[in-house]
Length: 168
Picture 1 (tube, helix red, strand yellow):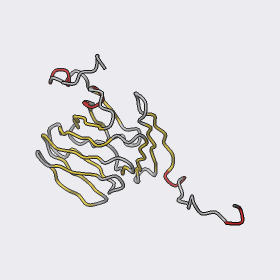
Picture 2: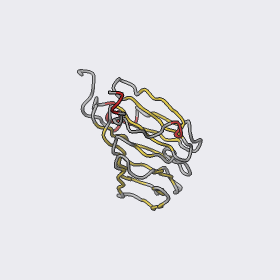
Picture 3: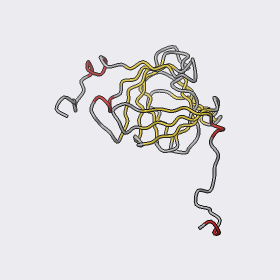
Picture 4: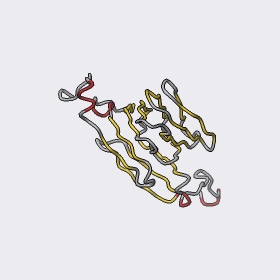
C-alpha cells in the first residue's frame, strides 16, 4: 500500500493511459485512465475515458451485477439504451443500473469525447452483448480481471431449487 498513490496529479493521470479495442466490435476503441486501479480502490471503479470522433466506447452491453454511470466533461455523443437514443453533451449524466437496459455510447462530434465513468466492482460480473450474441463473465478478485466469453444462447434459465420429492 505504501507505493499506491492516494492522490493523483494531472501529469500522473496523463502518463497512465490504457488503450483498449473491444474484441467484439472493431469500432469500439477507448483510451482509459483507470483512476481507481491506480489508487488501489477495490470496491469501486472510476476511469477517465477518451473516445475519438466516430468511435464508440464498447459494443451495446448490459451488466447483471454492477451498476455503471457516465458523466460527460467535453464533446458530444449519442447514447443508445435499448433503442432509445439520447443526445449528450458536457455536464450530462447517465446511469445504468445492474440488469437495466443495454447501452452504447458513440462519439458523434468532431472532437475527442472526454468523460468520467464508474460503478461498483462486483467480485463476479456478467455482461451481455445482445448484438453479438455473447456473454462475458469477469472475475474481479485478483489484481487483473479474469474474463470468459461464451455464446449468449448457451445460457438457459432453470429452476435450481426444484427437485422431485421422490429423489429426496
